[in-house]
Length: 114
Length: 116
Image (cartoon, rainbow over all chains, first blue to last red; front, top):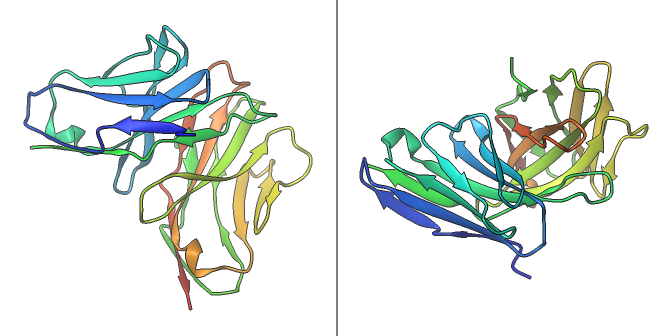
């Protein structure tokens, strides 16, 4: 049981380049999330999705786009990378379980923009 | 205003002792959930414990308990009988609403070091 996986694990981009981060989950969860983690800032929500074909902005959405074409996948795109987007990116998924929405996290993607 | 506030950037505790990690939250929604996650140096996020806003009793999971004081809007994590493996970053998080919006907010974390 893979849980939540993220591809790639590491990436170095030059300013202005684009890339897509892939998140996949095999738990049939309805909800999926993209966070970034910066030193001293905790995790901040970028975008999230409450179901296939739907997405919504989180706390820090600027410079990112997302798509949820299939229930199990949630893509995070950077159209024109900037050094300020250097961060560790976490994907998470959740579903109604009992009375909580416990989030299951992927291992993270470390992105450096030079 | 910060949704989740963790005022202790770093904490130390002696092995086998108990430690309390502080968390306060801010919401006007009557329905919310509070979570604690552990992030060891390897980087993964590990779910520890959950407390719902309507839960009457404090949540417990093994050596972890959540001291929920609703009127004070605090949700402190208590780790009993600390172990060396408890050394990690700890994040408090909140889900607002009944789940339809489903936004989560995280605090800035507390770094816990267990001393042998």
